[in-house]
Length: 121
Image (cartoon, rainbow, N blue to C red; front, side):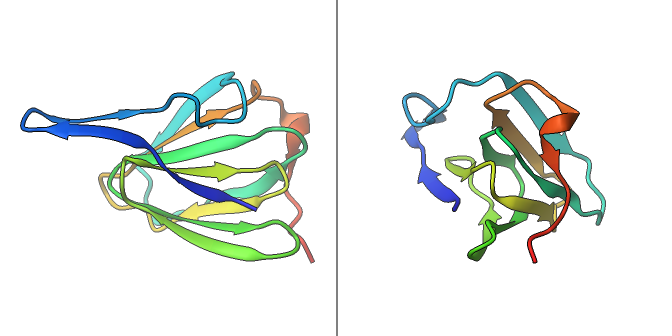
């Protein structure tokens, strides 16, 4: 099941710098970000092989996860928190704030054959 990581952040009077280094168990092959979302539901799938790490770098959104055994709901609203999404985690993203920017790191390049849209029973 998913895991929420607290990322190393250095802060002082000049602002904050968050580092993503040596915390992901996979090599990053693709980066994408989701923004400008209305009240739509995003995601609605799981993967055969792809691991992902999601960070809401601005604003907030909610991610629902189901790995076929357990369910969890995560509010992402801090740019120093990273939600790890395993291939078996069927997930949806919703409740995006108007200013939300959700950045996702993926372990593989896009491949439509890697997607499984069926929900767990």
